[in-house]
Amino acid sequence: MMNYFNFVPVIERNMEEVLKSDGVVIIPTYNEKENVENIIRAVFALPHAFDVLIIDDGSPDGTAGIVKRLQADEFAGRLHLIERSGKLGLGTAYIAGFKWAITHRYDYVFEMDADFSHNPKDLPRLYEVCAAQGADVAVGSRYISGVNVVNWPMGRVVMSYYASKYVRFVTGMKIADTTAGFKCYRREVLETIDLDRIHFKGYAFQIEMKFTAYKCGFKIVEVPIIFVNRELGVSKMNGGIFGEAFFGVLRLRLWSWFRKYPQKKK
Image 1 (cartoon, rainbow, N blue to C red):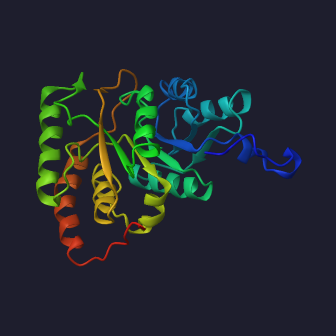
Image 2: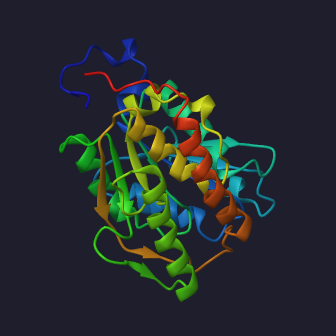
Image 3: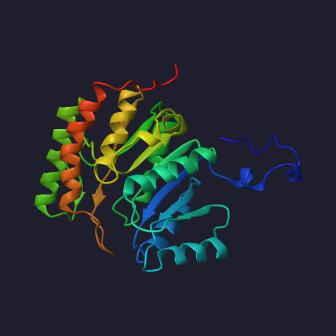
C-alpha cells in the first residue's frame, strides 16, 4: 500500500498513481442497465477504496453509456471501461481485465458479477484474506459452510453443488466451491499464470483459473459468502455452459499430465 506521507511534489508524480487504489474490481457486463450503476455505487461506498473496471461486450441496452456518464460526472480516475464489439465470452472478458490490471500495477484483482448475486460488502473480506492472511487467491464460497444460496431453483442448487463435488473429485483440488466466480487474486498469481493458455470462455473458465493457480503452487483460501440470485436483468446461464464445464474438467485433468506449470516464487 502506498505511503501517502512520503512523496515528492505532485507536479513530479502521475496523479493517477497518487489516487489509485491497490485493488481493482473487474465486472463483466452484457445488458446490465438495471444493475450497473447500483453495483458501481455500492463498490465505491465501501470503507476500503477499490477501483472498478467494467468490461462491456457491446450491450445493446446502453450499459456502457451509463458507465461513461458516471466516469464523466463522478468517478473519473476510479471507474474504468473496456468496450468490446460483441459477446466474446466471460473468460475472455476476465482475461482482458487481468491483463489491464497487471499493466496498471494493481496488487489485488477481483472478479465479481454485476447483478448483486455477489455482495459488494464481502469484497473487504476477500481483500483481507489475501492482503493480511497469506492467501494468494481468496474464493467467495457458497459451499464451505453448508449451502448458502438464496432464491435459486432447487434443481440448479443441486446441479451446482454436485458439479463442484465432481470437479473436486476429478482435479484433486481441496476446494468446496470449485465453480465460484467471486474471487480475489494477488497480482503475482495472474503474472505467473500464462493467461494466453487459458482455454475456456464460459462456466469452465472459473474452474480452469482455480486449477491452474493450484497447479502453480498458490495458496487458495475459501471465504464463506451468501449467494443471492439476481433480482433484475436476465441470467446468462444455459445448458451449454454446464456441458462445457463437465467435459472441460476431464480435459483439464488430461492436459495437466503433459503440461509443466510455472511455479510460485519462494
